[in-house]
Length: 175
Image 1: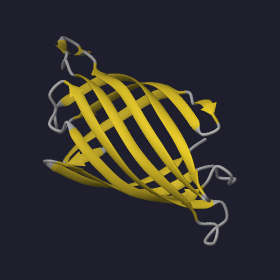
Image 2 (image 1 turned 135 degrees about the horizontal axis):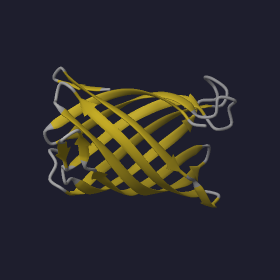
Image 3 (image 1 turned 90 degrees about the horizontal axis):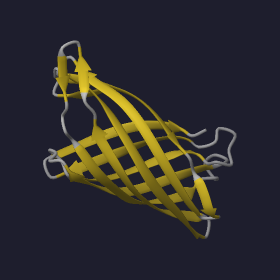
């Protein structure tokens, strides 16, 4: 659920990705996704499909880890039909997302945990959008893959674009 100026919109999606370990420090991850979104407040609804490939490379710096991530994906809003109504928004974009994340072990605070700092740059190419580029900076704290909870984290992200900014608190669990 997202709320902007009192207008709520909802998204439900399903996806699949497969991480391919190319070397000890390099993983390629192709992904496909399908989502449906809608908003009574905005009078809108529609499905979206996407495919992407992500490259993640990890540099070891003593006990710290520096991760370089790059993603390219294609996202398309699909035609929506309901009764006699049909709408095709004709929106399709290629998206690039590039970032760095520094992971600092926090064993002295709690076993098998780490503090992470990250920055990302996201750019959209294709259909005209309100925002065609934005940057994020954030942090997270949580368990590492060595822990029994296997990558459970909590964090926050600040996003900034030319005409927009936002803040997100997040929780994640990888399994």
